[in-house]
Image (cartoon, rainbow, N blue to C red; front, side, top):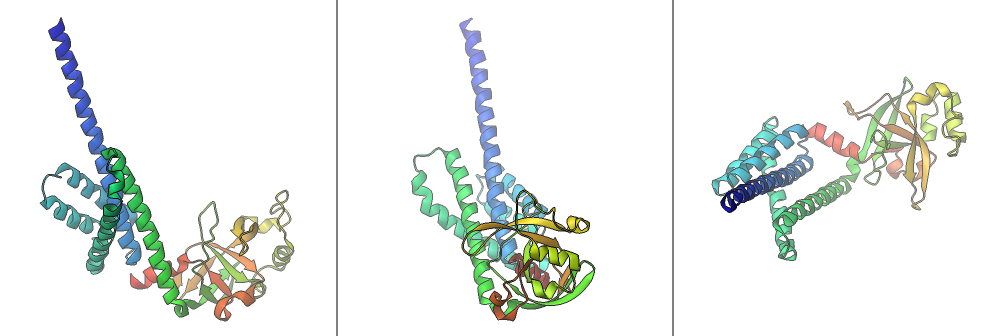
Length: 302
C-alpha cells in the first residue's frame, strides 16, 4: 500500500515539475518576444523604416522561441538575431544595414541598462527579475525613442514650415503650416491627431452658419454640440485639451476631407479653429500635430 502511494506521489511530483518547466519556458518565450519586439520597434521608428508591425511581432516571436529552445548553444544568439532582422525587415532590403545597426544600438542600450540595475534584483526570484527587466527595458527604449525624435525635430525646425492644401467641406485652401513638436493633442475616441488653424484663414471655406456657431460656441457639458447646425454634426467632435496654464477645457474639432503636403497626404484627423494666430511661429497660419513630422519623414525616406 505504501509503495503504490509512493509511486503515485512520485508521478504527481514529476508531472508538477514538468508543468513548472513548461510554464517557465512559456514565460521565457513571452519575455524574449516582448524584449525583441521592443528593440525592433525602436529601430523601425528611429530609422524611419516603418515596416508593418505584424512582421516585427512574427520575427520577435520566432527569435524568442529559438533562443529559449536552444539556449545552451552560443551560435543560437547570432542565428536568432540575424533571423529576427531578416523576418522583420525583409520588405525593406535597402535599409537592412541601418536596421541591423539600430537594433544593435538598442540591444547595447538595453544591455547596459540591465547591467546597471541587476544588483538590485540579486535576491529576487528569476521569474520576477525577468518580467521586471522586460518592463524596464521597454520603458527605457520608449523614452529614448521619444527623446531622439524630439531632438531631431528641434534641429530641423526651419524645415518644419510647410505649404499645404486643405480640403474642408468640399472647399480647398492653401495654408502655410508649422509642425509643432509640443502639439500632441489627439481625439480621444479615434486617437486621430488634432491640428490647430487660425480661424480667419478658414472663414471662406467653412459654411457661414457653422463658422459663426463655432465662433460663438462656449463649452457647456449640459448642451455639448446641441447648439451647432445639425447637418454638420457627423464631422464635429468634442476634444479635451490642456492650455498653457495647464487648465483643462474642451474645444470642437472638425474632420477634414483631405490634407496634402508636397503631394503627400496626411492621415485623417481633426482641425480646431483658434484666434491665437499671432502666437504661431514663423508667420504660420496653423500648427500641425507632432506626428505629422514622422509621417512625412517616413514617406520621404521610404
